[in-house]
Image (cartoon, rainbow, N blue to C red; front, side, top):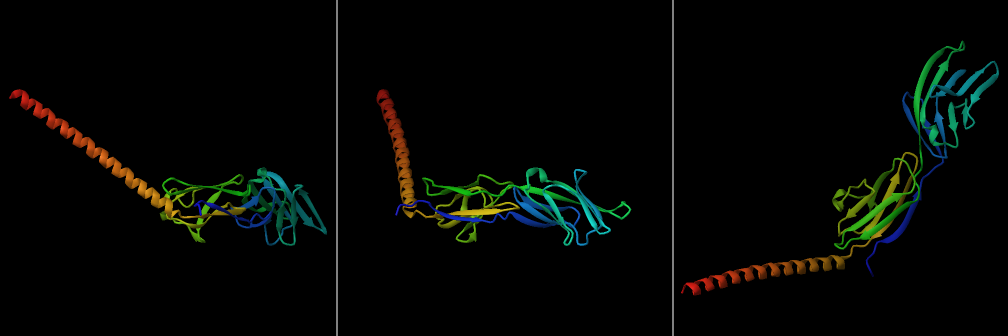
Amino acid sequence: MRSTLGLVLLLIVSQGVSKSCDGRKEGAQCYGQLDGEIEIKLMDIVPNNFNWDREKKIYYKWRSGHGWDFCICHSRVSFTPSNGIMKMVNLNSTDSNNYTLTIFDDAGFPIGQRTMELIIQAPVATIHLVSKILSNGEQLVYCSSKRGDNLQYRWSLNQKPLQDTDLVHGHVQASNITLKRHISGQLVCSVRNNVSENQEGVYLYCDLGLIFRTGVLSGIILIVIGVVIYTLKRSRKTHEVTKNLELIYVNA
């Protein structure tokens, strides 16, 4: 069988369109998927009056009491007072921002404030692996995604984490790696960010014949180089002896 890198599709997608986040602590960070939705737990006990602001502008205003509820709401935002969850849908890149929750007493005076950060990321798209066996038997593999923000790469070999000692160039968190000649088995590249993860793999064949042929060829090259060097040195030495003999003959 000709030794090649047989492509084995192992596409696994974990791109849920809805995520949840705990925003009840000061400085909390929440990640949402582009074009998806997110549920943010803002509070356990819902006050009668609060604002949820973005860039010091009212994004959501809630007023409750005397048997009625009132809100000034963004079209893509809804709030559930029974569980204190703010839901945002159809997320876009402009939703990435700092949001401030301000709680008011019944007289309208602020009595508490808390800020959180919302970060929207494009999910990881289909993973593409490009592989190549080099002339010396080493194996070059490229891993890439056409879409995705803040991508992180992780490699595994035969369901175990790939080690830096398995590589000639690169490191196990890089998108491009060069593997040593003896490496074989199922190689998987996993690409993830805070909102999604994909992975794809190839099966690596260790071409012992190529390694042997490469070793033999290298040996032959070394022998040829040695013979050439020896021949040049011998030729130079013979020329020097002949020149000395000519000088002796002239003197005689």
